[in-house]
Image 1 (cartoon, rainbow over the protein chains, first blue to last red):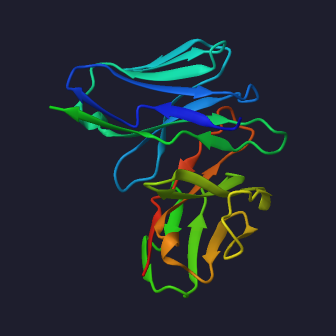
Image 2 (cartoon, rainbow over the protein chains, first blue to last red):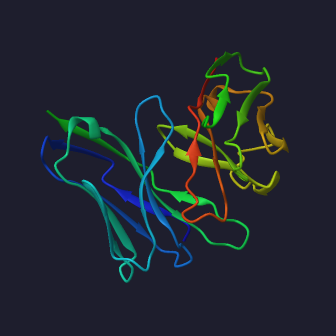
Image 3 (cartoon, rainbow over the protein chains, first blue to last red):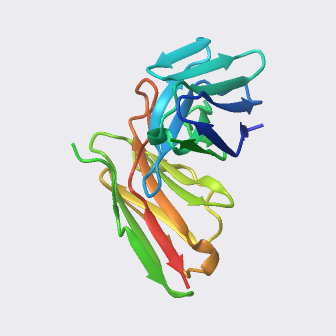
Length: 114
Length: 115
């Protein structure tokens, strides 16, 4: 119940295309859903995040779509660029009193071909 | 403002040796997280401190692993004795719990190789 399931494991997209990464969860106690981006040799960094009372959030070329009833959320990268090539992690914050840890997906390795 | 600082950046050691990883969180952050990242298991939360107190250590693999946070600006993760299966990248992250969004800021990681 604490899992966040992420797919696909890897993704190859042509420059200018749309990259879509999906995540699903079961636990309704999750109340915050961030996406992190990780470049090789670096730590993950927050990319964009959404709360469950919002169905969509857009920041530049990056959009989160959130479907509360289906317990699914996805990251869309419009006009994908080679510089977007990285590993993307979805996550969810478990609100359990004083314990607010992030539950992480396993990551999606995105390669954008020039 | 400096980000999360980790040391060493790389560590090569032999099986059975003690390994100590260090982390300095971002000033003003009151939550600190230790993660381990491997290809096989992804990003695993090992332990999480809030206001220097361990809140969740359910991810600590076994008694060989221990973590301390003696003050708000320093934490250590110790492995004793180390084993080859401990080889991984260890990340420290910090956040300001209670702040909107509670973004975790990651350090550059320590790449550990146990021979």
